[in-house]
Image 1 (spheres, helix red, strand yellow):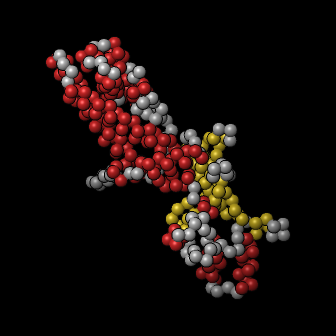
Image 2 (cartoon, helix red, strand yellow):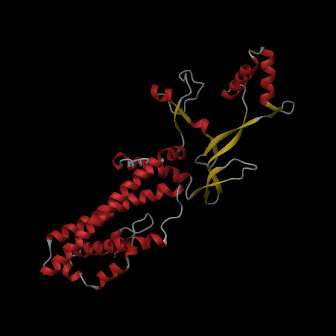
Image 3 (tube, rainbow, N blue to C red):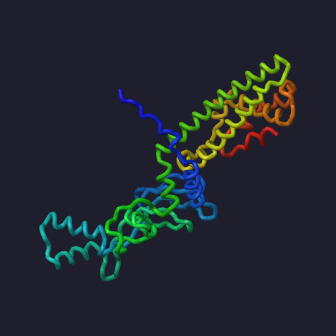
Amino acid sequence: MTDTAAAPAATALDLDALEATARAAAAMAPGPWFWRGNTDYEEPSLSCIVPRLGRVEVLGHCPVDRERDSFEAREYIRGLEDCFGTLAEDVKERYLREWLWADEDYEVANTDSRLTVTDERNVKQPVRDLVVYEVARHRGLPDDTKRDHEGIHRGNIVDVRSPIAQHLAAASADTVLALIARIRGVEADLAHATTTARQEMKRADVNGEGSATAHRKLEDAADTVHRVTEVTEYLDELLQGIDTCGPTDEDYIRHEEMLRSVSFASGAVKAALNGTAIDNYLGSEQAEKDILHPARCYFSGSALPVAEANR
């Protein structure tokens, strides 16, 4: 039996950095991302719909003219020499011109396909033109230093100067799994905190007195709800390009009991902070509303914060 790989540690996540990267990408390519294309006449592309611009290729391809002084040209000649042995210069030149031109007389060049990302103008840019060379980083040269610079002695790259490309790298499967693990952990804390808070409220009601412990547990529950909201809002934004469905009716039904507990506990916290005794809140019309309408505090990026939703 194969062991299941453990989820990445949530503590390794830099949420501020992830959020900044995702927001920069979302500003350039907002809304759901989706794959589209027709292999009969084009390469597949990762796309989105931008208002007033229509479909924009987030990640795609574009044709570029072949160049004499390029990696592909050298590889082409090297492949010929591997097959036929060392070629004379005039023979190399003839083969190279055949490789470069579809019709040399009319200056129609042969082309190759290049991977592209969209830029802030929603124009496709070859990724190759946006790379950051490893040597440039090590030597403190600007990130946009070109390959032909005298200080760039090898072509290894370490980054691409595009929020889209950087977001795609940051939102790896391990990152998403770590975010999910963190949210599940916070949800477990929330379930425990709200259960304890309700027990304390019942105990306070039986004793006929406001329990300081109940107040403290309720405040802990509210703090946990806030943390769940923050983490889930970010995950909603990060997963826009992976899962575009959003919360469904089944999500609300599946989490109904937990949501009722959250809504009841957060309503009691608000009542306590407004000076209402716990025993006066229990059984009140407001408490019944909080229990019967748990969807008001469903923690998603599109929901109101708990304190606002319970007004």
